Each structure stands twice: as C-alpha cells, then as structure tokens.
Image (cartoon, rainbow, N blue to C red; front, top):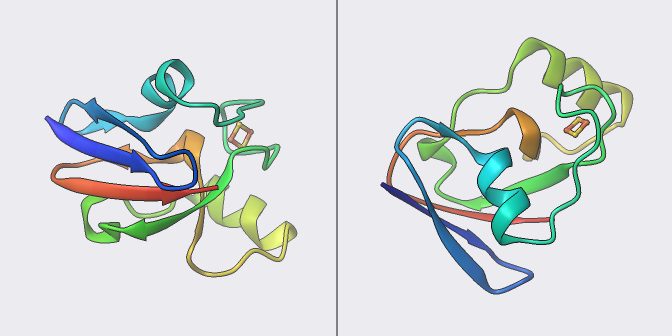
Length: 91
Ligand code: FES
C-alpha cells in the first residue's frame, strides 16, 4: 500500500501500489474531478513530494496541461497512478 497525503486538506489515505489516485481521492478528500479522462483540467494539482512514486504524464494529460499553460510540476489528478511509497499532493 502507498500513502497519499493531500497537503492543503491535511488528510491522508492509502492507495494500493500501482492504483489510480482518483477513486481514493474522491472518497477520502474534497478534490474536484470532472471528466476523469484528462481533458477538462478540473483536477489540476501539484505533486509536492514523492514525484518519483507516480506515473509519468500521459499524452492526453500533457496536451491538456499545455492548453492550460500549467507549470511543468503540475498534474491532472485523474491521470495519476500511485506506484508505491509516499506521495504528497496539493491542489
Ligand atoms: S477530471 Fe477532467 S482532467 Fe481530470
């Protein structure tokens, strides 16, 4: 099990190794999601710690973030897979 901390909410929860963040974040935090497909940008966030423990950006995610003029460190939470270890996210 990996551990995820949502920094700005101060909540922590577990995600199975190699699990999608979105279903767990929906249940355990107030993070907002829209399309769930990396297209709408609603779920923009930053991985503030443990970026080595998440998947690389998907192609669709890269395109959406580019349209939003996002910072290189920003991600779309609906596209994040938590590989292992500890990850801290802020939105
Ligand atoms: S919910 Fe639409 S991009 Fe993540």
